Image: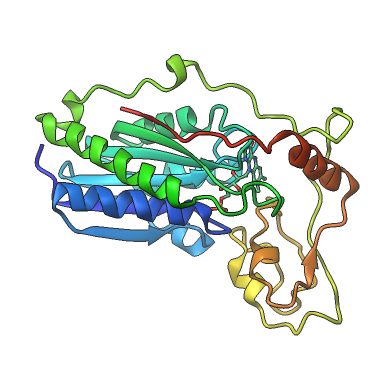
Length: 276
Ligand SMILES: Cc1cc2nc3c(=O)[nH]c(=O)nc-3n(C[C@H](O)[C@H](O)[C@H](O)COP(=O)(O)O)c2cc1C
């Protein structure tokens, strides 16, 4: 198959997904001997542009797993932003060492509906953004090596076919259909309800620099007063991760209890999985 460019596109509020996408995407472009272009679609304004791709482009699209699925607030943009023309695509999800459940299958299906031919897919274990105690250093050196190996195998597959349409679709986890959203659990195993939780601010720590305002992928934080969060919070933790003064925090009891549950049950190292 003729390939001219690799486009690395990612939604990555805290940065794990960007690291995975760029390592895999640049290695893939190198193997294919073509230039790569990295495109960040985390900011709301970036998700208002429509992007069209040619049959000779390869698009790598990477998103984090939220509740076992593609982040639901991102779905309308993923459906509206991208147009493939039988363009080969690589679907990539990251997950925080619990499970990626249906997110990769869902992302593959979204790409196919957008006109892409998904030639490969990967689910990569990362640190969990809810807790620095869950695999804080992943992707680590072993992951980097595996990403380069994935890229090598993906390039071999892409080079071996006449067109993306002729490329066999990857079978993800036995082709199980997309399942329900994962219900987060509290430390006692009962459902945790924190959908309405929003970040609070230590007023005396906050110097109103506005970094959290620009980091929020939902544009939920008030630009004139960052203590005010009138928009939808997706709990991505971007505002907490970016604040240089540690001023943003959650105080929701169910959220904390879910974090405690994850810290207890998600310590065993999960493997990366890829599908060709
Ligand atoms: C709202 C939310 C839900 C999440 N749900 C899951 C999950 O179901 N399974 C899992 O293993 N990790 C889950 N995670 C962890 C993220 O998938 C993981 O940390 C990801 O790498 C974060 O990507 P980023 O650093 O690019 O933002 C969740 C994180 C958030 C914010």
